[in-house]
Length: 176
Picture (cartoon, rainbow, N blue to C red):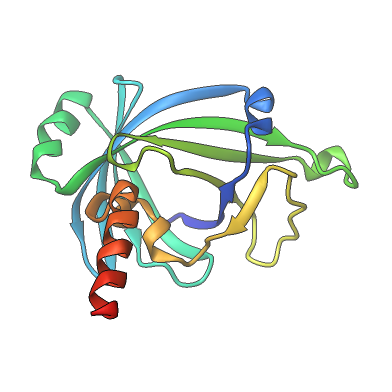
């Protein structure tokens, strides 16, 4: 059994790009989402695929089970999705805290979204425990941990590209 403990942040500027050591292209789709669990199929670099089950978020920690599946089977599951396919490039960005030692090195994942979520940049950091102290790199912006709209399942249903349009419609309706 695997527990995922992560924090999410918006990204400021492009300084993180020169620190990135690798990247991969990801397409993922949600086969089911309910208040208890989401079931996701993911294809990485068109050659590796996984099927994942994640429990609903409870603070920073949640259950995550992930299984390798054949890429052709993942492709066959994609059309069975709810909402849009979430497309992104994941950049791996190691960061050693300026005031820390090398054993305090943490690896950030910066997701640069494309398609319907184009323009959104989110940095995630997985932690060994919930109370683990994190020195934030200067390119880290506002924390969005726990804000549902920034999670991939929500982005599949209400893409980032629709947020501003929906906000304008809501404001117009309340001003009438």
